[in-house]
Image (cartoon, rainbow, N blue to C red; front, side):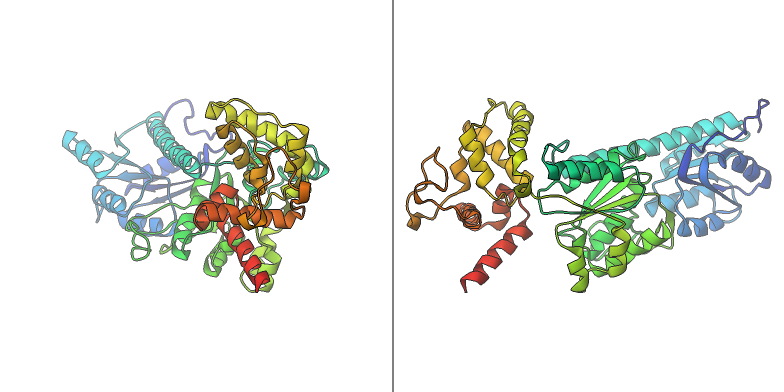
Length: 473
């Protein structure tokens, strides 16, 4: 069970510092041998002499790897493996035994074993099996992260574009904060690039090679958010979430070593806020319905369109969580505060989108740029991108489409004329209101579709309409 050239000498650094391994074998010598082999390579290694003792540990901790003897006193290794898989345990399980034949090996693989080794084995053999198993775990995690990124369909800028003082100040702030391993709170209106800022912080940190995971906190129940963030034990949310009869890992698990971005964190229900605060303070995650406490190493970046200080005052957000998140706060300027960047942004989106759409590039002339700079851009950079995309599809830049006037107010300005010319409206708030109401009318009052076309969130649209309705009373 040992190699002559000191095979148990520890590596310079653990190969899997965030992973935990469990050894289950009734022979003390085998437990000691495997513990020596794995301890330098894992963040945590536990060893017990029975499946019953292993069951208690698995209930309290998450293990990425289990090395399990088949022949044990009491519950056999195969029986416990079937139990683990039935409960949704997805970690790697390597079965070992001194007595085996082909039928036993086949039964082990059918039960869900990742590998099967016959005693006695050398250190190189067990380490090779462990390496292969951990590689499978890594690939499974990377596949999940890839599907997660594709499902999110990010539509933000790949990088911040702009030379205005406001944008230079933002870029400088992100560069200063990125290397600091502390929570960051991003504050800004919808469409200002909060997710892009979070990605910039991640790329500029020592965690850049680790996962970047995003969760949009709106539109989910408290149970669904608990499950998404922290995971759950089998059956914890069976009545609230379809298909929740098996264990599930949360986003903190998939973001291990990297960055977790919580968009619109103001929408978290108060019970979930309490759970999140506990994770930040203890640096451990406890899946819902489980006794497991899983150590986590994740940088948290949160974003909110709402003023969290006002939400705290209103009793909708926990003060202690707010101060935990607000270690560093960065405000993202709305587009109306850096209109000088409109030309650069327009050119950037044309260069980005024209090849994707197979459309001919468009160029702004001085008058068109001036008209765009008069508009208030309630959807900010996201709305500008949508405008560029529509213009490329139509093959022309129709700036007057941003200022539709009600029919009773007379004909719309002719294309190529400034919205304020010849008695047209010049009040930017009035122009914004007419544009939003015009888009809303064009989709027969469908607020979800109107918000999508405008490039703003549905909540922002509903708030603007409610404000105008109150003013009319």
